[in-house]
Image 1: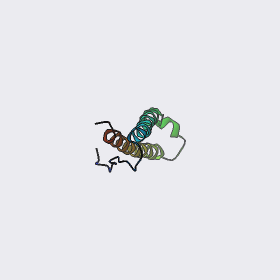
Image 2: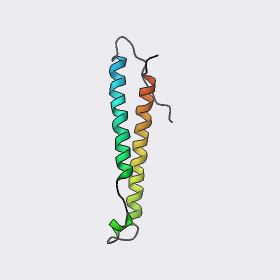
Image 3: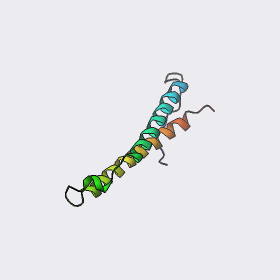
Image 4: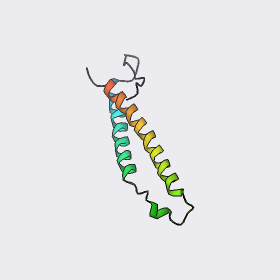
Length: 86
């Protein structure tokens, strides 16, 4: 996992519990989105009437989206861990 910049809570900042709840919600949403995106069909039969290589391009695009979502998952995970009660 990448080392992300996470906050050290203080009296002038947002309450730790509020941040933890927000980032936990984001983490859960990203996990659900990743599950849904992985399950979404991207099959060659749906591209058979298009130019050769179109399906390969579609798979590459889906994989790129999955990679970005995985990065977002890592970020949210880092924040949740950093904001856990000591």
